[in-house]
Amino acid sequence: MQPSVLPDLAHNDSRAMHWLATAAAVFATVAVAGLLQPGDGAASASAATAAPAGTAAPRVSTAEAPDPTGVVFPLTCGSVGQAVGRQARGDLDGDGRPETVVAVHCAAGSGTPPDGVYVLTHGSGAAPRVVATLVDPALRLTVGELAVENAVVSATTLGYSSDQVPSCCPDQREETTWHWTGGAFVRSAARPDAGV
Image (cartoon, rainbow, N blue to C red; front, side):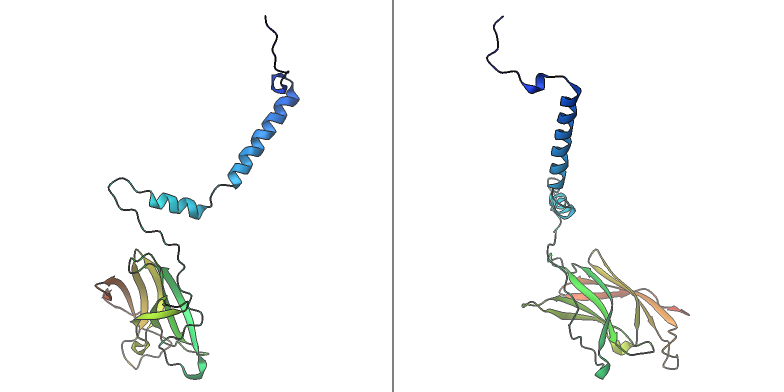
């Protein structure tokens, strides 16, 4: 038998302390590797861009939706100012950049001021701009719910059957949706419900 020219290696030692040290080193390596993995956003983006052969990958937006803070909406409120109520975000026109849909009313101290519903997009500069009015405040409607899903805006609006109905107590409810078609928002509404 020919003697080895290599020195005795530590891993040839089968003592328990050696195996514990080896296990600790492996555990530390796995833990560090786990911390260095990409976050959920990167994993989701990778998964979303990997589409089956023959199908188009969905657009993954890295842009942020416009922030309505500081935007002056086409709503006349005098000295009381404007208040942004409900908000919803999503890519409405399929360009890969999200828009923000907001319900805005005058910041009256009491009562139920009517809402205007507006669509915001990023302007050519940094400031967001209003590109569409979905609900005109002149209609005297209040927005109960607002959402964006699959490029469709949906809103629950509360309104009045006549001018004699007090503004505190709307007596009509309507579910309305808008979707972007042919360069404009197309509105569709279910039959209004009386007796809200």
